[in-house]
Every structure is written in structure tokens, then in C-alpha cells.
Amino acid sequence: MLYIATPGVPLVTPRPGGTVEGIKYAHSIAIHAMEMEWVQMVPKNPERMIEIRTIAEELKFTLTVHAPYFINLNSPDAAKLAASKKRILDALAMAEIAGALSVCVHPAFYLGMDPKDAFENVRRATADIMKKKEMLFPHVNLAYETMGKPTQFGTLEEVLALSKEFGIYPTVDPAHMHARTNGLINTTEEWNEMFDTYESFLGKQSLKKVHMHFSGIAYSVKGEKHHVPLQESDARWQDFLAVLKKRKVEGVLVCESPLMEVDTLLLQKTFEKM
Image 1 (tube, rainbow, N blue to C red):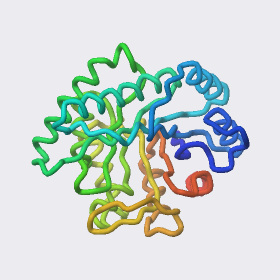
Image 2 (spheres, rainbow, N blue to C red):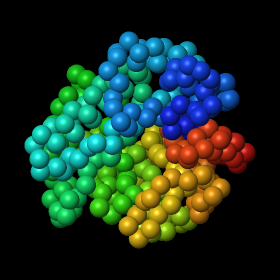
Image 3 (cartoon, helix red, strand yellow):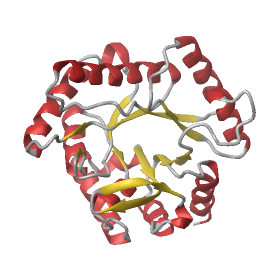
Image 4 (tube, one colour):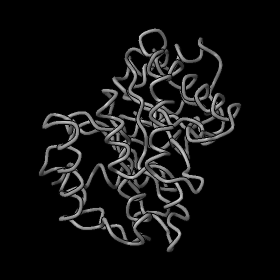
């Protein structure tokens, strides 16, 4: 099964709002997954996470998480590096309590460094994080995302190599890849090449449990600018869905459109009709 998720609480969630009410509302309009957007800070209340887990289990609702933006595992500043690792670990630990499957992380910036050296720094930081897996997040995946700007660590090959080494899987974002390449990665052939590369690193069965993002996106030669609604973008989203259907991809696809539940339902209904 491929679940198409909203990027946070639906926009028209009834008052008082919040994640629990957002899950209930999303379920009421036949959406069955959500990415909890912890992009500014990680929640600190375990009881609230238990409440989220309880309603999600009751409604058979699938959850993922987006970790804070303020992360750079390639930072030369020891304090910033330690803070980055702590934010990731906090997100993974709270995701475990909430029953989420996977936590999306923006891993690093190159900071003018050779990408190979940046990779080694991110790899060492990842090794430190994964030492805490059994204790803090035994059932949650650490998902490094493919990133939308050339200045950011996060090519497909980079995140797949780390995923293979540590037994995890990435957040593949074809919209980011489209923006990073200034308009490439937007055809059936290119998406199939992307998934072939994914399988070559992680194995034939790896596409049965994915964490992906997709949206329309504005970009320039410098890469990603911002997300835009699907039907206002150059994204060939119907072709992308056809690739997912043909390859029988399963897991969670987060629709990161500003229209949130509207475009999530557009993707879902189109996919179901295929």
C-alpha cells in the first residue's frame, strides 16, 4: 500500500486544531497519513505523543515526522554539531513514542568543502546517532532527504550510500532533485533511473517501504525557491504517479503542496483511478 500524506495538520482542521484533531479530520476526508512538521522544534511532552499514537492506532492512520531545519552534520563548530545531533535524536525519540515510522532530516551543508570530506563528516555523525537506536528509537527510521540546492549535502547517491551503510532508508524528494538540477528529473525515464539507482543501493524489496516527498516547486539556477501547488507547477505529477503504480512502490508519499489536503487528495484520487 502507498499512503499519500498531508504535510502537517490539514488547513481546515476544526478548532481547537493540533495534531490529534488533524488526524481525526484527515481521516474523515479519507486521508490516511500525515507528516508531523516538527521543523521549528521537537515537542517535549511524551503524554501528548502517547495521545497521538493512540488516535493513530485507533484510526489505522500512518505517521511520519519532519525534523527541525536547524541541522548541519557537517558543521566545523563542535557546539553546532552537537546541537544538530541532539535535535535529530530528540525527533527520533519522540517519533518512537508517537508511533511514527520515519523521520525526515535535512542532513547538512557543504560549506564550500569537498563533497567527499563532507560525506565523511556526516557519516561519522550518523554513526554517533545510530549508537542510540536500540535505546531511543528502535522502530523508527532515520531518513536523510535529497535536497533542493547545490549548496546542500543530499544528492541521491549521498543519501543512499549512508542509508546502505547504516541499514536505514532516505526521504527521496523528486521535486528537490528537479530544482537542484534546474529542471531535470521530471520525466518517466528519469524517475525510473532514480528508482533503479535506489534499488541498486538498497535491494529489490526496498521500494516496498519508502518515505518520499513530492510537490510542485519553483526554482532557479541556484536550486529550490519554494513549493507551489501541483497544477501551477511544471511537475508532471500524473506521469510520476504512473511510475509509482507500475513499479508497485509502497510506503508513504508526503504531498508538500501549499494546498495541503487539496493536493494530497488530488494525488490520492488520481493514483486510485490508475
